[in-house]
Length: 261
Image (cartoon, rainbow, N blue to C red):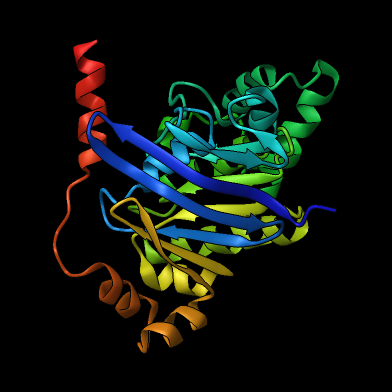
């Protein structure tokens, strides 16, 4: 039985002459909570776009749940749930309507939709607000609806891009407790990015730090602190990546290319 749900081998992505992802290798075991960390422009978003079939690599391979992201896009998409950094809910619809719309896209049968949606809204503590418009929800409540939406099709792997960005301490704590609950009870592997290093240190069972398109280190927080002779994941991160403020060059190059088209 394959113990790994993610296998990335010699992954390469270029934008013209700029190398955004430079022949990286890593794997994620089933059941892990995996933090993928790095400064702006390190290659995180580019890697995730390839892993979630939204972008095509120039070289190497990625397998998700045993399926190749190029050859088996449909199977990969059936295997993953994705919660983006930017809000993607329709705020003029209710929580229930948002999930109902996506249940159709996911191909969930009409006979199962209502129960599935209500079970998930109950799971994230929002069943009593199912008929309320999303535009009236707080940021934390919207995130909870997005988590419910991401779980509609029973994915094996959940991608979270900066899931607690802009949320207060209480809401962040609630959200992470819920994500750990999803990981434990539903046996879903979690792959997340975050600029909150304290958060990552507490939550992740495995951490990878990427910079300039290359993986610098992989291990548990304790292993990384030991290797870098530091006392926190944040100090280890700074020791490995430096103190310079970054801009996301890859994102800028990609946007310019799309604009020119």
